[in-house]
Image 1 (cartoon, helix red, strand yellow):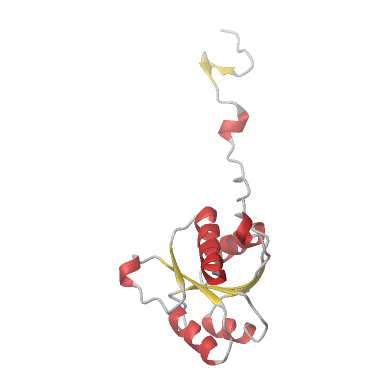
Image 2 (cartoon, helix red, strand yellow):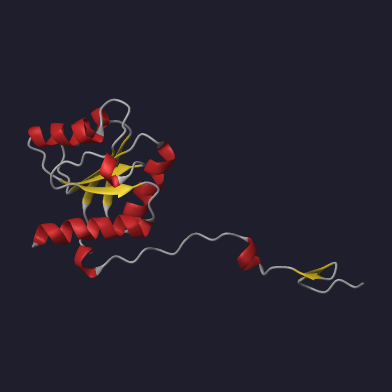
Length: 152
């Protein structure tokens, strides 16, 4: 049997575009959240932190990354619009981080990230919860909801 291009031993092969995973398409930012935000991201898992930071940057935001609550407190000396924090940081909880920053007069909008179900997580006033794993679209939607809700 003669091999034809695109065939191997009589079986059709998939086009290259289907065999090789491609990077996902950029997430579209809803019109009401198109302003660039200055985001403080506190996440101890390096892979989740890197992926979330990349997503936030793809959405047009500036991101400062912290691997712990204490690092986030130190970095929060600068002004931020949004705090995105894991609930289970190694040194303090995400809720404690929010409380410390609010007590210090650092008032941001807050998104808490958790692998636990919504009903099992204590959410500080005014904060939004996003459940892991979350997609870029989920993160964009929660940011939009948070900032649209605050602008009313």
